Image (cartoon, rainbow, N blue to C red; front, top):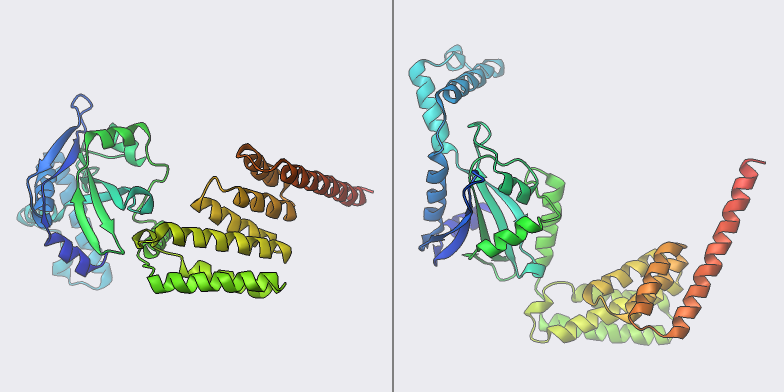
Length: 365
C-alpha cells in the first residue's frame, strides 16, 4: 500500500465494526469488541493507547536505558560529535524512554491475504511491537494463529480490500471466525520482512487489480475462433499463438464482468485447446501446465484431466499421469479413453525401465 493510500485509509470514516481481543492470559476468554465508528486514525490511536498501557517494569526501563545509550555511542563510529555520542544523563534517559514508548505502536501480521478466494476479505493480527522487549506473557492462542511467538494481548481484525475497485474498509471479525482460524490455522505463515514472499503477494495482488473490458472479452472470442481455424488447417504453432492471445486477454477480474461465466468458459476452452496443440508439438510440460490451469477453473472438467494425463505421459512422468487418469476415471471419463491412456502409460513405463537397466548395466559392466 502506498503512502498516499495509507493517508487516505486513515482519513476514512468507518462504520461500526467488530473485532476480537485475544488476551495473553489463557484463563481469559477471547471476546468481541466493537468500534463505534469514526476515522481509521482514531481506531489505530485506540490500539496504540491499549498497547502503551502495558508499561515497562523498572528493570526493563534500566535495560532500555542501557540499550539506548549503547546505540548513541555507536554514533561516534559514524563521525558524530563526542557530545552526541556521550552517555545520556538520567534525565535524558527518561526522555529517551518516554519518546520511545510514545513512538512504539503495533505490528500488523497478515494471516489471510485478501483475494478472489475469500471475497477480498483479509485477516490480520495486531500485536504490541515492543511485546518481547517488555517481556510480556506469551500469548499461546495468538502464537498458534501466526505460527510464531506473540507476547501480550493481540487483536484480530478483518478488512475488505479490492484493488480492482480501489475499495478498502474494515469489516466485522467475529469470534466464530477466530475460532475457525484457531482450529485450522492458515497453512502459509506471512512475514512482512520476507521480501520474496511479499513480492509474490504483490504479484497476486497486481493480477487481482487487472480489469477485463467487454472489448477485451470480444477480442478474446475472436482470437479463440482464429485458433480453432488454424488448428483445423494443421498450423499448430500459429494456433498456439492465437489461443495464447485469448488466454492473455481473459486473465484478470472476470468476476466484474456481467458475462463472467461465458468469459471463464472461453478461457477454459482456450487453455484446453492450447494444451492439445502443445502436446502434439511435443511440448508436454507446457501442455500439462495449461491442463492444470484449466483445472483451477473447473476441478471436475473431464477434458482437463484427460489432457493432463496425456501430457504427463508424454513427459514420461508416469506416476503423475496415472494419478490424473485415475481422477478422470473417477469423474466418469469414457472407459475407452481410460484404457487407451493406461496402455500408453504402461508401455511408456516399461520402455523407461528397460532404458534405465541398459544405462546402468553399461555403467557397471
